[in-house]
Picture (cartoon, rainbow, N blue to C red):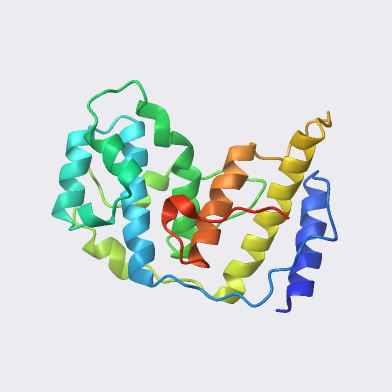
Amino acid sequence: MEPETIRKQSLTKSKKLGYPINPDLPLLGDIAIRRTQEELLDRMLCLFTCVACSFGFPKQLGWSWLAQEGLLEKVTPEESAFLRNKDDSLLDKYAPHVETVWTLAWIGQVHDSLEFDQTCTNDMVTMFPNLKASASSERFRNKCQLRSIEEIAPKLDLAYCIHWAIQHETDNQLELPKKPMRLRPYIIINRRHALEWLFCEEAWDDVPMDID
């Protein structure tokens, strides 16, 4: 699908969801997936563990599970600091990233629903290895399959257009009526982060998130 066609669809969907649109935003251009399926799975499982700990799973057990799965070298410095810190004052730090994990899971075909007027489903945790039972991730890995760029690119473009709209409203202090189909800004931004990561070579915490 041509970038112009993708953009036309993105602008139509953005407007329907109640966001301002900007027809002059740069198109996606010639993009390529830079991550392997293994990298996707490693990133997804590390972040899932951090999210689980933000929702009450013991950090020590989360760290132990990552060690069991050979993933300690795959966590980011920030994730490592979070999991190894016994201070629970920032326990909910990774809670918003449930939507990031949901997006990565969609990319890996763990589920088939990534709509920008719907949050993740309440049963997401059941789609992943059972941390409480110290379950192996082998079965989970075997059922995952990286989606094609033809499937992913339209989602990335839509996330980009909506992120621009969110920033545009903030910068211009626009007081627009609330739309029932609009998700909270952090959901859009975290989903875009996951999608952008696929197409860049920067580290997870340094993913470019330009909006113009």
